[in-house]
Image (cartoon, rainbow, N blue to C red):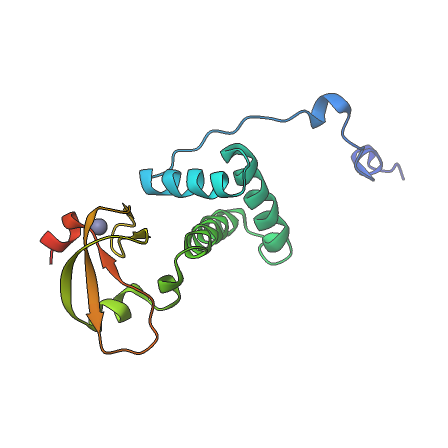
Length: 158
Ligand SMILES: [Zn+2]
């Protein structure tokens, strides 16, 4: 009985040649806030956005490789992981993210109109609040919670 030639041929994957290993370009559409987050995260790490995304993708695929077989599930998983990574990146310099935004907002008794000294971020839209800028500081009875800020745009949406 003749052996199926395709079985023998496929045994062991040939290592990629130098030509095949050259970097490829993948384009993806992302929402504006994700783009901003990626740029900030890349800047913080002194690397290019491209390099950061590559790292995130490499980490994510290594992580999910063993768990997810179905390719559509894989895409969803990657998208979820990417959002989670982005959220944790945002949380790096923003400790208030450790408590949920809603929990923090529910515990604010009043908003005080102040001038920012120590830079922060609006809890709703993440807008950067710079020194000298007018912003709203949440007053809360909760002990030990980080400062909660709203920008002028978001205070009007209350
Ligand atoms: Zn805002």
